[in-house]
Image (cartoon, rainbow, N blue to C red; front, side, top):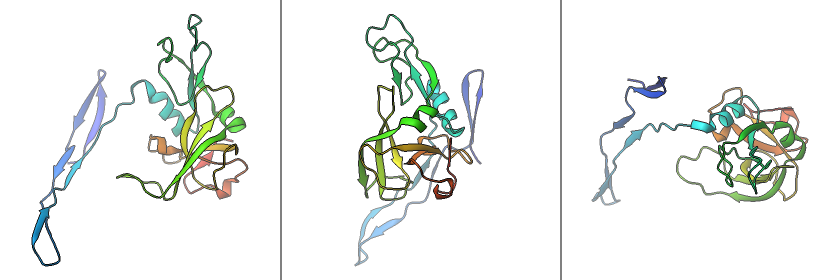
Length: 195
């Protein structure tokens, strides 16, 4: 039976099978000697976005939503803008105000640092090599980690966000980056820019 999740009166209602067990299979060496056994399992993980839902909905719509501390009594963070999205100011712990940073990103995003990797963890769905980049924005006090989908990274290079808004997964993988000036025809299939 397929699984589904609904929210009823503020609570998750789960229906169906969220886990299954498959038959074990023997593992044998080249001589046929039993060395072990597989234990195949399938588990569906349900992740609640809570206060961060606005960020992931924004990405699915081709927008970057950050936050700002509007607490005038905050000695350190007042008027600080955060990307990635923060529900509360890390300095005064007051709830932050959402701000649309899409235009700021299109105008001023640059690569702060980067790392290229050929080896990834389990369940990785990104094509290798993965070009992880840390992105700075004008007027934003934090740095966002993302990945460069085409082109080569270099510190200081301008980048722009692209979004998998045609068929979103509602995960961080719906947001990627490309060098500024990349034409719409050069974007990977399924991605579009907000420009």
